[in-house]
Image (cartoon, rainbow, N blue to C red; front, top):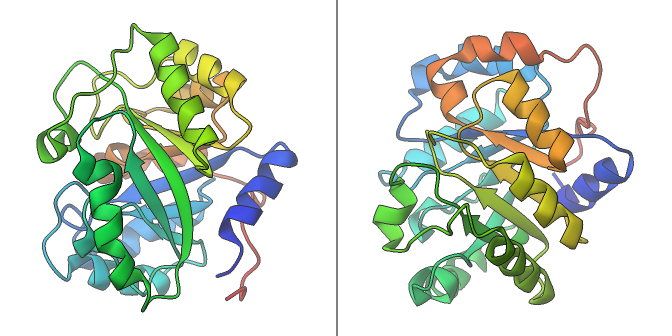
Length: 253
């Protein structure tokens, strides 16, 4: 799969709204993956993200290998650690936790990853990762020992996202965290989108079609759902797509 980011930009220019399903290797049993992917493949999903804050060794490889036999959608790693890198994926969101001040997750883990990535043929997409408080502590906070940005200080969120763009990030990921009590508000999404010239990804706490549409209407270019897929795959009945929704051509390897 080539030109993933280029295709994302082209889809956005055409006015298409993209949807990624985030699958956590520690929460998805391989035995049930095939049934879940049938619903995903008939939905509006355009990408599959794989990763979690903590994942057992080898689970990422095993999951991605299985996924590649069940979907033609691009599979990208959304890593919580360098141990989650896999040569079986199509691409990697090369995250920097710009909302925190722990140097390990701003640059340290990224430096550690380079020696591994040299041996992998992954499309790497530099991504500014902005964690925003949602009403409860997230796994990202516990693992990275960082604090999320206050949802009440919108200007600080906007400035953090814009600084990431000026530093050369290819896209910004606004994250409320897995199982968030509240998703990112439309007010925040609109304010950030107004400042950016790069794609905006939004995820965390989105568990209904209305919340999905709210994020799109506010300016999200790509929305990520995770917990909704893990606990209620009937959610996909509400977001079936009768036509191609930004899918990439089959056989583009």
